[in-house]
Image (cartoon, rainbow, N blue to C red; front, side, top):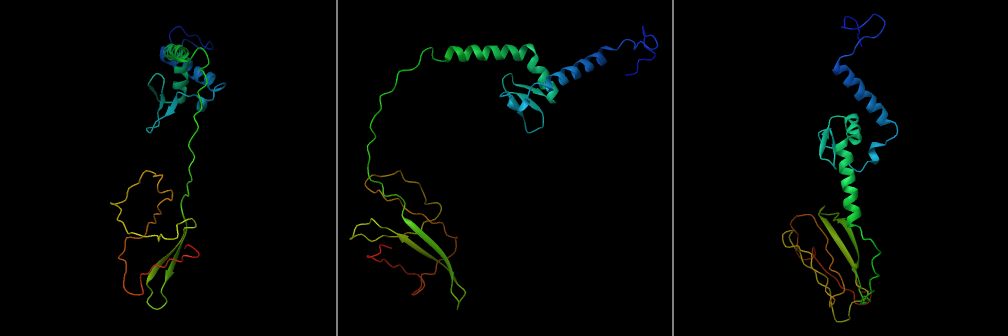
Length: 197
């Protein structure tokens, strides 16, 4: 700081600092003091917003730098809000331990789950046409039942709630939105009753 040409100042004594300079010096000292013992990132009320400034979530105040935030945490407003929050939490917390809840037995039922499946990408060597081969395992399917398939658009899809009558999950495979060639020999299904595939 330049202390020359100040009223009341003597050469070599440092002179009298202006109010703004002393405030700046005080803020810098506070910032240096606060930076040493406190890790800002562990403060639950500290938040850096998308604009690059800092916010106190407890007091809803904005700060331009970390030093300003740390000075705020030492201030009266923040300390009052901390005390108010602690009193509120102490009041809302139960004074005695809650009685144990009675355990209800959960009904158990057999859930078969999602069927095993394998999807293979293929290309016809003669025509260069792309294809998909789906191999799906249904090990616990009934003898008389044959699995079915259906093509759905994205607009038809919905997630159905689980139904106990049908313990096997539906299998959904997302395929590219291209026209499907259903010509003879191009589109086929095969169900093997022995291997259940």
